[in-house]
Length: 396
Image (cartoon, rainbow, N blue to C red; front, top):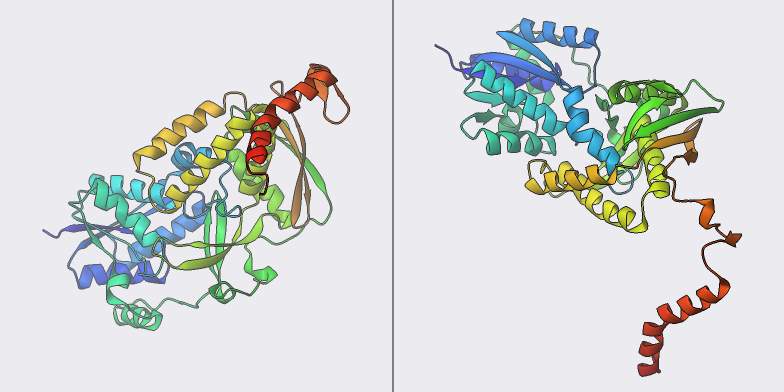
């Protein structure tokens, strides 16, 4: 009886090569699986399944992990206002763990001895995928044919033709990874330190040239309504993307350090994530204290770094999530945003928990909770440590 392998399958050249190679060269029974984290439609899923079965897979499974991805990942990226290097909302790097976890469950369900993927040896995803199995299922052997064989694109095509699979493999000029939390775009322009992607490289094209005002409502930190219409967070993210992508909003280029030690540059398009994060952050500025905002920023930056570097299973991540959850108790209110071509502006917010309260005064205008003499005394007290220092170090 043949041993089984579960192959993470996208339908692209690399994973398509893996199916007949695992069957013919390894003698394995191949079960393909794809995990949807919001990156493709039902029609695309059917097309991917048809290709997997045509290539010889014994079974193909499509797992919907969008809700799990939101509740255990995206939600905390919103709570933390996470933008890596103040730019990137972890569009692709945050979803890989949840895809690997879903595949691990499928490996157990199928009873497979092996798991395979089409990663090369040059990127972050191989580490994110392998680490889940190394930690949680060390008994499952990992096969990465492209990484192990170091094959060229043409060699993969030739092998498939030899096995009777003569598909069209016209290389797209741009590598695009789509998910609910944004889309990454790579091309020749991002392989060097300079260079700008042309307009046509982005999946969404600008069709709206005017301005549009929208409102986002948050309840305990989570987005729950768009333009007054209540909806589940996942549905809201999808809807906001459809609206904002027509303006070309959310495009940028992220430069950062990879897990494997190199620096990388990638373009992305993430209108909904950037709008949600910026709107959420504005609301927090109004309802949280100075110390809450400061410590949230420190821990959230570290949370994003650990998630990016495949450390989601690190126990401290659960500790940070507990902290982030607790900070969101009063993050409830409505934020107004204006959309413009290639740009958006967060205009203001309203909340019953707003600490910018006129009962105590209006900045630069009037105060109602202390007198001018109180300020004089307060200033003397906080100046005292510095007066002592400069009295002793009078030549500094």
